[in-house]
Image (cartoon, rainbow, N blue to C red; front, side):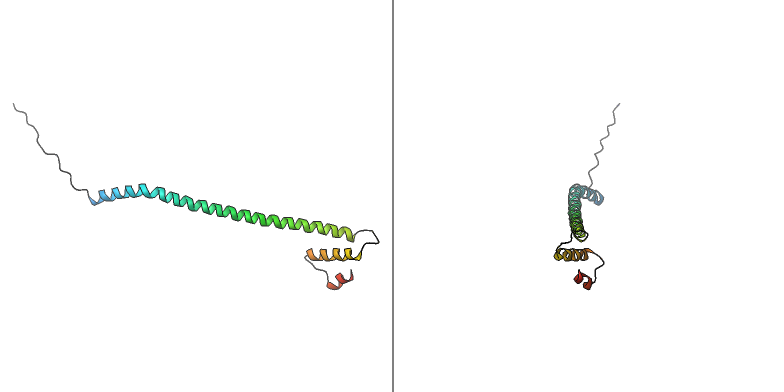
Length: 119
């Protein structure tokens, strides 16, 4: 008995199809593009966050300056009030005039000019 041997030739490789080539190109592109996109996106996010932090710090400084200015104004008003409510008889007229003008300067409702001139 003779053995039958199968002498079929291996199938020859066909040239890659368009879809196979497109798949390879897409994989290469994804391998290269994803880190670049992540890097650029991260940079954009980081600069935006940094800019927002700087803006918030500037706003906080402006608010702190306004609070400090109000505290100083309050101290001046206290001094002016103490001068005006003082029981000393020989208080210089300049101090009372200064006190009235200072209070008028920080008050939202202003004194009449004639009243300030009388003080």
